[in-house]
Each structure stands twice: as structure tokens, then as C-alpha cells.
Length: 155
Image (cartoon, rainbow, N blue to C red; front, side, top):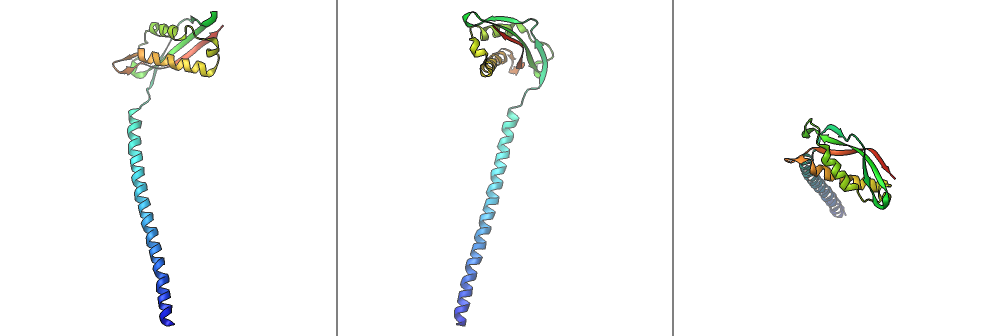
């Protein structure tokens, strides 16, 4: 029986060693793969963050008087707004006449119901802002970054 006891003990020790070895190999593989994945994530994330910098706020240019725009079905909109310029655009105020024209084109003929909800107002404001950014971009430099409503009355 002494020989059988030795064989049983050797058989019991062999699986313990192989389980420990397997756990160590899996742990090392996880550390290596996790480190490589984290490194790739941070390297790729750094490239996109640098490419998309937010513009710095510059001066604000406001229209002097409110603008009255004809809406659908005999209604109208009294609109006052100011343009937030970028710092890259310089310290000189942009010519507001083009912005007035864009506002008239964007808001004329809209339904009052469309302008009476937050979603509707925000959607049209985003469209207006996009047109302003396009119109006030010179040599690849955006001169306008936002538009603020100082008056917005429908009737």
C-alpha cells in the first residue's frame, strides 16, 4: 500500500501544479492584452481630441433693432439676436447685414406651431447657426461660433 499511497500523492500534486501554471498563464495574458488595449485606446483618443478643438469665444456683435419676419398664415416673428464671434475671427465686429439676410431667409414662412416648441426653435436655430458659420468663414477660419436670441416673439 505504500506504493499506492505514493502514486496517489503524486497524482494529487500534478493537477495542483498544472492548475497554478494555467492560472498564471491566463493572468499574464490578461495583463499583456489589457495593457496593449489600454495603450491603443489612449493613443487613438489623443489624436481625435487634438483634431477637434473648441473655438475660444471672442466679441459679441448684436443687431441694433429687432427684425420682423413674416411667418405662415399671416403671423409674424419679432427677432433680436447677437452673434458670438470666435477669438480667431479678430476683434473687429462682423458685418451684421449678411446675418440679417440669413435670418430673414431662414425664418420667413415658418409655422407658428413649429416655433412654439423648444424642439422646433432649437432645430431652426441650429439651421440658422450653420448658415451663419458657413457665411462667416474666411480662409478656413470660422468667425462665428454661436447665436444668442435677445428677443423672440411670435404673433
